[in-house]
Length: 381
Image 1 (cartoon, helix red, strand yellow):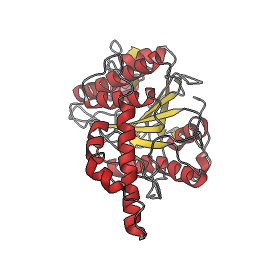
Image 2 (cartoon, helix red, strand yellow; image 1 turned 120 degrees about the horizontal axis):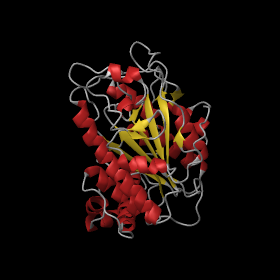
Image 3 (cartoon, one colour; image 1 turned 45 degrees about the vertical axis):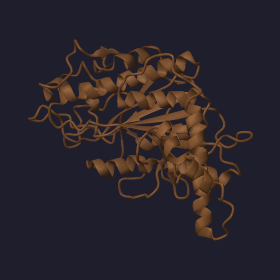
Image 4 (spheres, one colour; image 1 turned 90 degrees about the vertical axis):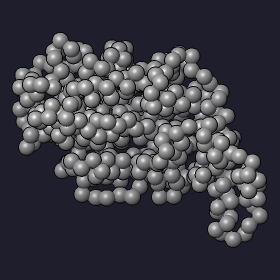
């Protein structure tokens, strides 16, 4: 229940991040195989390297003369044809780390491989806003039971809530309301802090609960955990919630064995949820205000292994989906398969370039303040 004080109902005029844009970050945990997601279906090396698990040319959902999508991504393929998808290929960072935990830390903090940070890149956005604004009117929300490092700042954290109803029942009961009513009756720092935090928690619970009830999606969402998360996000966006960043995770992509079936299943779950979400946004005229970024902590090695899977690799594709893209399509080609780094793809785009573009051109806020240095931006927005 001890949630940050900035999470509260909107009061007064907007300040800070006030352009109405929303960012949805989808983390594909485990290391999704990018080569079987964005398929170079005319590349002979691809098929020689993967005699068992390569996606057949006849199955690929063709997008260009050289690249196509995994057959499970039928909805995203349709969104691509509608000009709502940009794919940045070969995204990574120098001196890549193949550990799930370390590589995810690097992505979530926006650090270099040789440095460790205790705050997340979204958390530092919240820190900068709190220092710069007299009044907070914006927050970051993770649809989960625990908060990722990405949303943890030095002085401000995002909030992890899987279900607005459960949060309301937990923090919005009469007992907590009665305690919160005495928030201003203590002069000592510690009890004063705890009571004020409790008061903010009850306010936040009521706010999220009430907003989540203002809009009921007309179209059906898949009855999956990810589908339910996107339905909640849609309800809050379409009810004009002041949430600016949503964060969701979808796991199961560590496909060392039996990759064909396992990746097919996880990508289909992703595709069903994302396409229902954007169809819902379009029906309400909000698809141009929402940017979805999908990433994984690393890709897989080019060659398949003996278990019908792939092992931890390096560079990967990042998906950006929005009705407000300036330049949809493939931002670049997949890395060359005849120029590998010890069997792995060479990265072409630093992932912090994607972050910098979103920070400066979408939210917007100063990417150099958040990332610690200036990065060349991409042209998808």
